[in-house]
Image 1 (cartoon, helix red, strand yellow):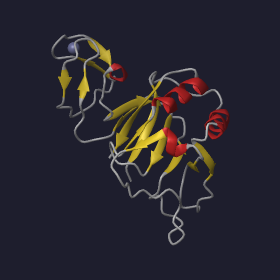
Image 2 (cartoon, helix red, strand yellow):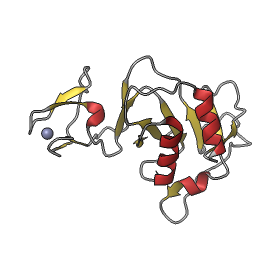
Image 3 (tube, protein in one colour):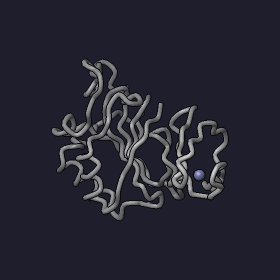
Image 4 (tube, protein in one colour):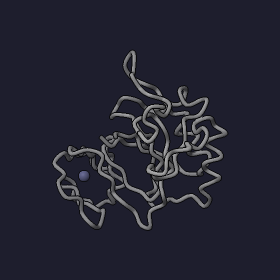
Length: 184
Ligand SMILES: [Zn+2]
């Protein structure tokens, strides 16, 4: 299933206390109750909150997006819900698309022919030759780099866009700026 993934701009960021982040997102109305999912569904998953639809802008006139678990298929994850992912031991580069697009943070050169991602997570731009950590490149929402990911399941690329208010809420509760990308 596709998803929209939120990450802090600093790839090393991890919350000091995950339950506090969850509680604050519930207070903000982005997260709802914990999804009482069947055992076959792994991970820490939440239904959408009361203010969710005002924090995410859906594009198109009539999006056919399921907002609740299916009664017929209770183990189906194909509906819009939020997963607080396990903190990774080290920074991961998550590729959201076969066709990554990036811009160098120094010279704005566009790179669109990414194949292998360097294991060092740094890349020397082929135009300005400045070596930069991949988290500083502008990936145009096609990839992200981090240790802590909040995933909004059931959203196709560009189908929904987080409001600046939601990104500000994340910043307020974590003390750090956030961005997002899509996994197709
Ligand atoms: Zn460059």
